[in-house]
Structure formats: C-alpha cells, structure tokens
Length: 198
Ligand SMILES: [Zn+2]
Image 1 (cartoon, rainbow, N blue to C red):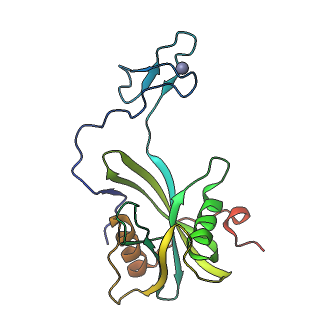
Image 2: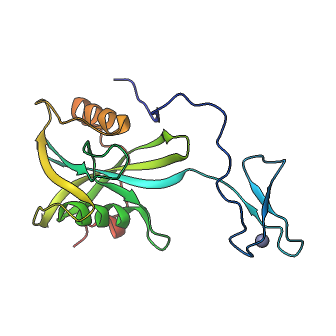
C-alpha cells in the first residue's frame, strides 16, 4: 500500500491573507512582509516583530483493540459535523504531544490509553484558512469507562473489515486502512510520556 502523508480537502490556490491585522505584542497595525510574504510585520518602530503564519500541530490517536478501532462522532458546529474521526485535538503550549494524545483520548472517550508508537505524520489542508500538521499515534486501551466527552456526540468501537461510518478526514481513512492492512506500527515512543510505564 502506498504511503501517503499529504491530504487536501480542496483544490489549493494562492495562500489566503494572513488573518491578523494588529500586533499581538503591542496592538499597533501589522503590514505584509515582502520577505517572507506569508508573514506580517508590526509597524511600530520599537516593536517591529514579525508574525508568521504556520500550520497548527495536532495529535490524532488510533486506539486499537484487536480488529477494532475507536472513533468519535463530531459534534454539531465543528468541521464535518456528524461524521466520525479518530480522537484528536490541539497540543497545549506546556504539554508534550504524547501526553496530549492520552489527554485527548481521555477527554473525548473516557478511556485511558498507552501510546505504543508514532504511526505517521500528515499535512492536512482542511480549508483555505485551516491547515494542520497531525502526529498520528497508535494506542492501546488500559482502563477507564467509555463515554462520549462533552466535545463529541458519540464514541464507539468499529470492527475494521465491516463497513465503517462516514469518516470526516481522508487522513484518518488512509491511516486506518494502512494500519490494518500492514500492521506497521511506525516509530517507537518515549516510555516516560507514553503512559506505558506504570
Ligand atoms: Zn508590535
């Protein structure tokens, strides 16, 4: 099976305008930088800080038990609402990505997990104003009681091979299909943060 790490939900054109108009450091207006053109520079002579626009790092966690994978139904008002996805979310500023992965699974599904490997990394061009860089983690359940968290509408195990519900992200589809076809786990993870050392 061909490896894929770049997923685009739309036909990409020229980059959107940087969404910021005022400097988050000093509140003065920002102007477009000539070089690099994706950045904005503060007009205040004493500040002159440059604000880049970058993809957002997220974690997506494939929790597997035998031939089953854990999926969440996306809440109304979120991108691709009503469709299903791997538990996922943003990494907090003071948090490592492995701890973020365990926290997101706990918040969205109620389950405790140990991260067992780094499955892949994917660039997701979701909307012209939303690009993520997703670290996909493989995990195994270790405890907890399954129940949908406040930020998802439902959570359930699905047997791979049976029809899956409509998935919200092509990166999730690809990673589920690839993992169950190859059982390739990817790279090992640091046991200090993966939740496996107990
Ligand atoms: Zn400024």
